[in-house]
Image (cartoon, rainbow, N blue to C red):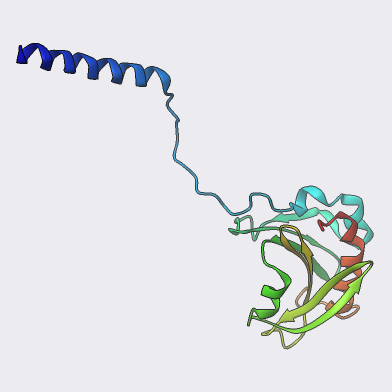
Length: 175
C-alpha cells in the first residue's frame, strides 16, 4: 500500500509541474533595472525645434543625457548656441530640495511669465559661466541651464540669458 501512495504522489507532482510549465512562458535576456526616468518629462521629445531656434539653439546639436550616458533619476537634453549651451533637466527634486543642496548658491526667487522659479548657480562657479532656473512641476522640477562656451566672448551674463531662454521654453515645460 505504501508503494502505491508514493507512486501516486510522484505522479501528482509530475502533473503539477507539467501543468505549471504549460502556463508559463520563457523571457529571454537579462532583467534591466529601472532607470528612475519613468514618468519624467522628456525635453528631447517634447520641446519643438522651432522653439529651440527662437532662442538661438541648433536642434541638430541635440545631446541626450550626458555624453549619451543615462543619468538615473534625470532626463537631460542639451543643445548648442553661438557662445553658449542650454540644457533642460527633468527630475523629481522639489524646489526646497534644490535650495538645500550645498553644491548650489546665489538663489534668487523670480517670476518668469506667470510662473515662480528659482535662479541659482553652482557654488564652485566663481566666473559665473553657468546659471540655472528651476520650475516646480508635478513630477518634481524642471531646470533650464545655460553654460558659456570656454574661450568665447559672452554676449550677456549666463543668468540674464537663462531667464530669457526659460521664458521662451516655459510653454513647453510641465507644470
